[in-house]
Image (cartoon, rainbow, N blue to C red; front, side, top):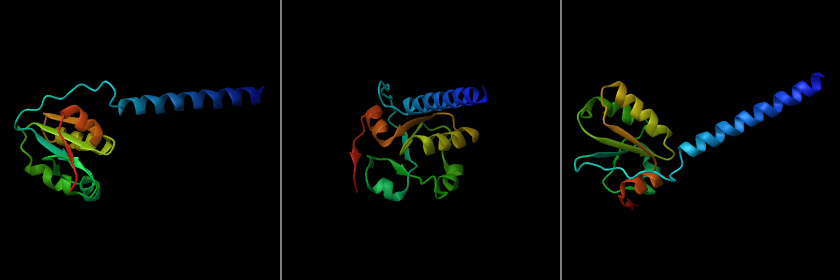
Length: 129
């Protein structure tokens, strides 16, 4: 009896884990992503590393490396009234950056996810330096 219960728990745990993984992956998917209408003055922030940025970034994007502390250091100087769009490699760092911005009263912020998703959503070209 205990063996059957243990097997059922393992199956249920594996099923829930797979469902959570699929939900997480689908939230990062660019399929069906609506185009983002940016104002002429929108500020595009890339919160990846300088190496990632050099490998390709949205034209006109400003690099503020989230992992190095550069983003946190720049946060007090960001205009709270401006429109911002943020991207990174997967959307994770951009989400964290967006949360910090909103915590500091910067409300007009959109997480575009990955570089590829950001390019697709905005129509801005990816350039390599």
